[in-house]
Length: 195
Image 1 (tube, rainbow, N blue to C red):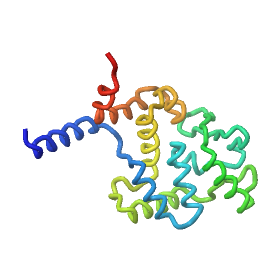
Image 2: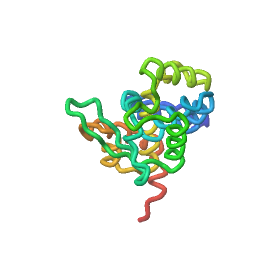
Image 3: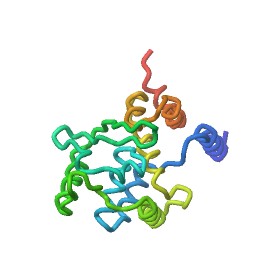
Image 4: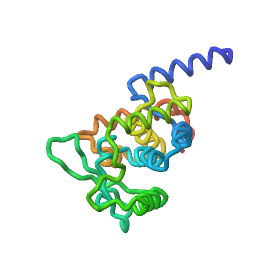
């Protein structure tokens, strides 16, 4: 088999395996998007979406009271279900520090929104940063960062039930779709097996 045929087969296999996978960004692409956001608030919004998997409406509803700074936990308001509920999402120290600095610098009250912008404005911010980073328009919207978070978690071995809880999905089926990304690189799992 020639190299060109092998690459073509590999590419077609990848497209079949990822066909139902939502559009997402890779970690390098997210870094490029963050670099394009010039305003510190805009960068922080993108970081929050990328590191928590929040829906844009959930991120915009965050208040300082949503964050447990001692426990490094974000209490995310799940707004999609009929009954409002809160789900805990762990925060990395770096993001926690950025949130604390943003809240302190802007003197945001406990119950006030951390970002203080509307959904339309958030969409414009993210789309502009994505396009400036060379991301095509079809992947230049806030929900792509939620998918990027989910795919990154799956690739790094986060169990599906844990990811399901972080994303606030009603059932496992919605979360399992992200597992398809593992099939693209299934060889590494086989190589790691011991018999």
